[in-house]
Image 1 (cartoon, rainbow, N blue to C red):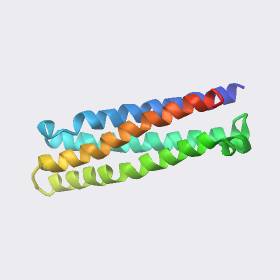
Image 2: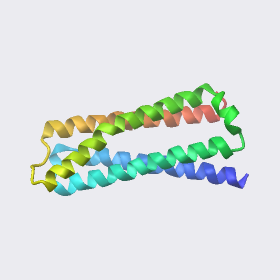
Image 3: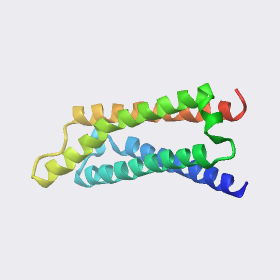
Length: 148
């Protein structure tokens, strides 16, 4: 029982970390706040966000394999598949902003100017879509935990 609680706590910690760093990206990725320090910070936040997503996936897999309910129970649950599909969707949505942040950092290092307002706005929209899908995953988890 203690091991199950530890896995659940680590999974929750990964979720909260992911939300914090995704929210931080959404807050900072604004044309009116853009400067070289913000570009570098966005790239760092994105790295931590990616690591949190990896931790979330690994703790979820640990619960799947070593949790008390077992893999058979999880894969038989329709909401598990919805949750995983949305997680993959968020992961795919995160690729474009990640690549964009890296390109911006390389551009600054090469002496290029800051990204223009339109590019910042487009990148922020990708982040905001992720930020709106992640809570849906959490809501599904709540309903699933209550046997629906």
